[in-house]
Length: 160
Image (cartoon, rainbow, N blue to C red; front, side, top):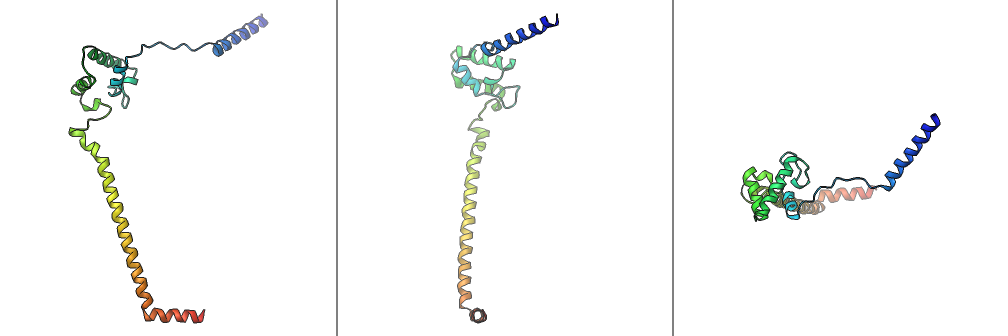
């Protein structure tokens, strides 16, 4: 009896291994959303998952929002009208990319302004360093004409 069980296990193990190697995994067939719905959903944030776009989120709420997008597109609304609808209903935080006008305009201008301030500060620092270098050269030239320095250098050369 033990021998029969061993052969059965070995045979079922071989069948399982063959199924894994030869068979393809079964993947649930999710209907593909139309391209325009997907493109619009990529521009919206998921209402329940922080930092995730609507198109890639599998939650029920996102499925409802995608159905709403599709329904609005089917009635003839443009992509911008659909985005405007969601923004009017849920505020500007629903958009993946904040609008470039209104309250969020400074957010778009801040990096450019910061870069300009950095470049100006770096230029001023380099200009000051160059001016300090010129004054050091002038001080060295003055020191070479100083009779005390000349006498000290002559004495060091004699002793050395």
